[in-house]
Image (cartoon, rainbow over all chains, first blue to last red; front, top):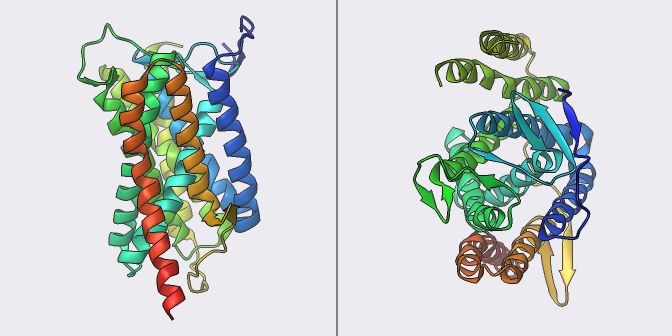
Length: 215
Length: 106
């Protein structure tokens, strides 16, 4: 099985999924160009790539457990017995970029001291904002079949979406906001910040190894 | 690959990443950086309203989702979702307005 898969049996009838994909792609391009203009290349890579890695690993592992699947997309990343659409991986970077900036702007009005508490408040706020968007997006996605939750597994749900999914959004966006800002504010050179930020998401494998082994 | 080999390779990647991250962190020379200043941000102008690009894009995402929800017979949940999803935008709008309001008074 190759790492990148192309869905050859794709039907080209226009559905709400295509509007969703198009929207993510356009917003991603706008934000990427904006970031390049404001932050330059290295910082842009730090804002976009680590969250794509973390989101991809998290989603592939959740899919390997049989929680849900993504039918009808064109391009997939395929690994660990899971298939994740490339556009969804890009979507994670949109979430981080939007919520990091919005929560940073709001929290810095209230709490001006630049310490770890400020980072904690910003990341909690970013996680909460992500949760707010997910409460609109996930039930709609499940209803329209953009991604399909496995209903045979017993779990607590809210609008047919498991509560663990909402917790996952909060943790991924909140955690990556904290990590990104922590590295952002360190006094290392920009190259070192970039390397640290790129290697950090892979550390999650240490936790996922035993998780896979015991489940 | 067997399940054991997959688990083992995941953990090896994880440990290598951990070692590289720690090495990079511990061996790095700290440099003097400039004071953290507010980044320049691009504005979008809609009619007479000036709004920052990031909350504007967020609002666009929420509204597109809402329209899709309305068109796909999912009215009740979509309206509830819209109310919750607008919280970040409204919060941002209120505090951003407050900031500009304070600036005007000076």
